[in-house]
Image 1 (spheres, rainbow, N blue to C red):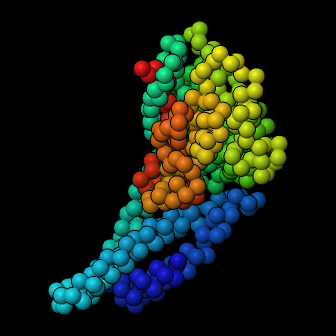
Image 2 (cartoon, rainbow, N blue to C red):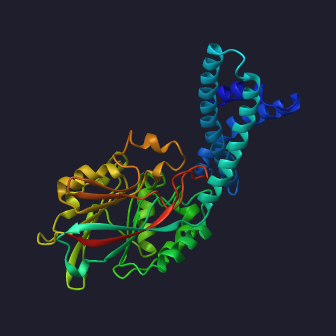
Image 3 (cartoon, helix red, strand yellow):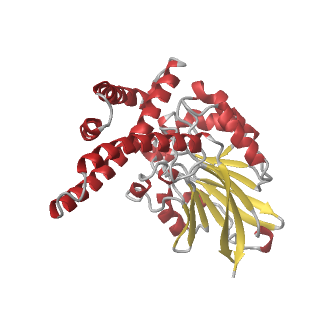
Length: 369
């Protein structure tokens, strides 16, 4: 991909030969920087691992935009060449080549800067009402604040997490739900940075389920650490919440792929309801991946809260999410099951978000006619 971008852009850049050599050098350095950046969480030496991550992930974020814009530029140039072959001398192709090459680089820088700002700022609060038929009057207005995909790791640290916690605690939630992918790294390296999560507060508690990245980082150790700081981890389990004289079942499952890492962690939405009172119809499931929704619908849940997709995180990758997941972002329905998919509260990989803003989600249950 780097070779493609180099051959398509560098010869047409309106800069002297020295500038073109510098552009080629940047592409070489980008190729060398991205792989160590992706593997930085495996480095035991700090701060070397974090520095490699920052370098590699910034390079990846910039190159992502550069690649997409180069493809668009080639499509535009191909169209112009077709027009020029039909109506000769109507289009100055040489000017279009140089001008568009410069525009691609400038737009890649601008979009990367804007995406960096969007990723690094504290996620904004997004409010969502979920209409539920037959909802007990006492549960009308019941609030669940959802966090997902924080990805504490090489580029997301204590202060980033602390800002999220302070924002959530101002929302006076009935329940706080964390739907996986909290970390990218070991307990040894990151426990100080996840510690603020222990200050999360809600009337009926703070609940967490594992995501696929917990399994990459040592799920058993992280489950123990989350419980140590006061979070309730639901591993194919449920709790019954009594609120204003009404009851709600809140269940949580291990990640959709958890069974691949440990057979005891196989995701089981039906099993999570084992022993739940049959007369409680309002059932909420916390499941990291949206594709759990089919099993959740069969099990009779009312609402599933998920994350995992990041909403695509960087345009146009959001269009590829549907190749793996049934839902990308927002509130959708599968039969009688409502599914809300968070765009995530942090980010993974490149510190960049384009067209998929991060969110702290304030989900409110409301009665529907």
